[in-house]
Length: 55
Image 1: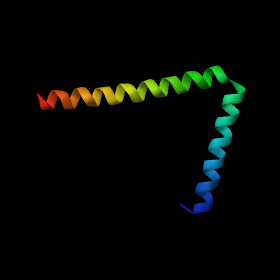
Image 2 (image 1 turned 90 degrees about the horizontal axis):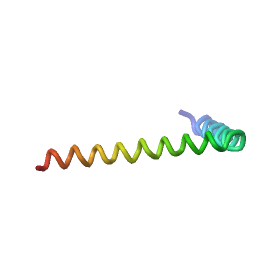
Image 3 (image 1 turned 120 degrees about the vertical axis):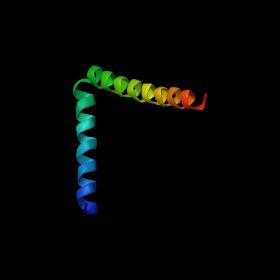
């Protein structure tokens, strides 16, 4: 992907995120919380998997 196109897409994503947060901060907070919970649960599941393999 050309560098200018990548930069443009990043700026569009950042502007959209700022717009979404300003427009509806409660929903944006819920989305961030959901993403964080997903990441934590995924890491925990990998930990359990490797713990089960090791024992």
